[in-house]
Image (cartoon, rainbow, N blue to C red; front, side):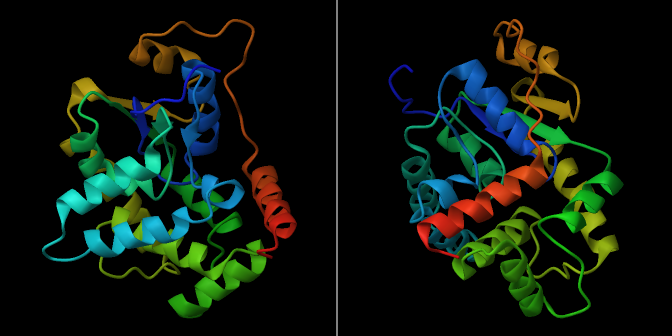
Length: 240
């Protein structure tokens, strides 16, 4: 592999469960450089949990310190050529400034399929309060409490909400639509690719001006298998 990148070239700003794990693998194939994904905090950089939480706390302030946020993003993403999934996707406005030459990929899918996938994996429905939702997800996935809080805060920040009833399907579907609409409104068309789950290599490669990989199918990461792998990793490193 070539020398590690010092700048981000591609930013995946699709929400979780829209093919972000597959996009991570695809970008690593195309760019021959690592792509930052939320799994990095589980498998490699555990200390990033607190670093992202600090940025989220600052970003939600009325008079946030933009320079602190920009510097924090740059520090966390140093050594990567691309990034996708939460927490980064919620910072797409800031990332446009930090990386003015970067391109953005908004992964999308049918919103009802998205909600179904969300409920079956990372956000199972419960009739309890938000606090108990966090505890339930922690129990199911075996995730560190700090990680779970950071993940929920990342979604809340991405949706630009003060609080969210994560148990309400209607609320989540509305948040999904509003998030995608705001991305399209705020990211210049010349810098944005709207990538539908299942589109394959062609639109992505054309957008990035790279050749379509020969004899390599577009990655299709099994999210359920990935979730189990993450649980196994947590057990190995002693978090679970």
